[in-house]
Length: 198
Image (cartoon, rainbow, N blue to C red; front, side, top):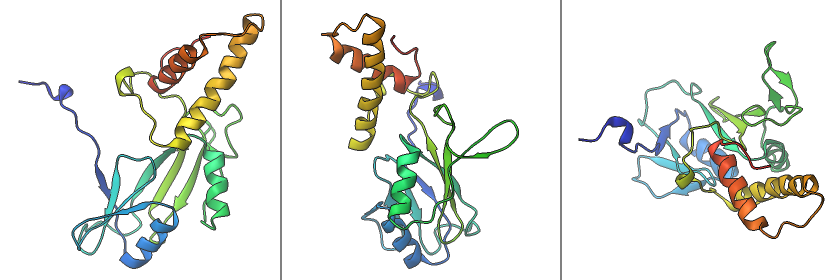
């Protein structure tokens, strides 16, 4: 018999409480989320690059509208924040937590998990945009690494390119012919939270 720790349990759907289904559909469509085919009494949207979706609809939950709080992981929260504002979506300012409380603006070091912005739907449900570029150790296995979208992959390639440029500079500026292997190692270890190559 399998131990529970060996049984995959992948988050598929989370339910959010809304008062006006049509208004919520308009809001989530405006974010660029895909509306999926579902039974008529359930509305399902999936954010770009996400394996998990949201459900809402009449009678789907008894939770108080506006009581939902969830996190959306993005590879570049500054870029995402700018894109939301450019699309006319109301989003709170960038901030980062400190021991003395939240401070407005992106984390000066752009550390993974730190910079955030709050997005609130018309019912008051909060979506915390959180920048994650390097996972904490143990969160992702090397054979499970993947990129949910072209945008995420491109951002990872740009970070690897910058790090590889520093790697070549440390080695006397000599061109590294094995750069594809170095990029691959860097990108997998960045996702799994392992020590990055130098």
